[in-house]
Every structure is written in C-alpha cells, then in structure tokens.
Length: 198
Image (cartoon, rainbow, N blue to C red; front, side):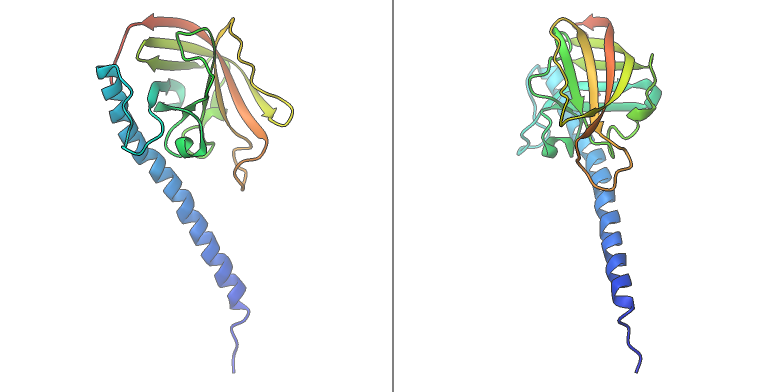
C-alpha cells in the first residue's frame, strides 16, 4: 500500500504559500479601494473646509494630497500613521508640521503599497503636496537608510522640509524591522489659498 506522507509537507507549504499570496494581494486591493473613499473624503474636506472621515468608523481623515510626477504617484494622505491608517493610505506623523507651517513634514507609507517605488526617486525630483491651505513644491535633496534603534527624524522648526518614510529593505520577507528608507526634500515654491479636488 502506497503512503503519501512525503506529500504532506509539500501540500502544507503550498497551502501556506497560497495563503501568503492571497494576503499580499488583499493588501494591494485594500490600499487601492481605500484611496477611492479617501479621495472622496478629501474632495469634501477641501470643498467644505471641515474634516471628513472616509468611512463612519475611520479614526483618521484626509489632510493632504501627495503627488510625485516622476513616479506617477498621486495619493491622499491621512492624519496619523498607525498600522491601521497606513493599511489604507500614507499617513502624516503626529507632531509633524503640515505644509505652510514651519518645520518638518513627515509622511509614512508601507513599502509594499503606496511607497513601493520611492527608492527610484533621485536628487532633484519634484514632490508636490497640497493641503486645504495651498500647494507646496519640494525638491529631493537626499535619501538615507536609518536605523530606528539609534536614530530619529529631527523636526527642525527653522526649515521647510518634507521627509517620506517607509520600511527597509523593500524586498524583506517579513514586515517591520528597525530600518527605514527616508527621502528628504526641501521646499521650493508655495501657492497659498489654492484648492482643488482629487
């Protein structure tokens, strides 16, 4: 009588692999679908001048629109950067300045969804940020890999800078870890009072 014990580990690994692929695909689908709801809330926020949550139970609301023309990236940024917020959109770090205010604006997103391509940004690339108060254009000046165990992003109240943050390395098998990939950009121009919808 033939036994199939040798197949059990293979079938188990195949099942786990299929589940992982499905979970990974769901993350991308959720991120894209959420941006539709977040974009609608952003348009309503800009038009009405109030915080509009993208869905009734949301604990975050849209605060900005981020565009990186060279990457064809155009996303709405939510307030906060908890794991739950970043599952749906990039997030503005608490305590961070918002464009139009002096200081450092810090925006985080997952390396496998909204910020999956920021490693392709080169010095000189343009990043645009729009809030209800106006539009700001930044130019990339540097990138860095930072170890969060020994370093922190410094909020410099004397500069108008934007820092994009995501986990590193981009091809890591496990999420999290202490390393972050940072893109630093300095304010070039601003246009206050302009509002547009997504």
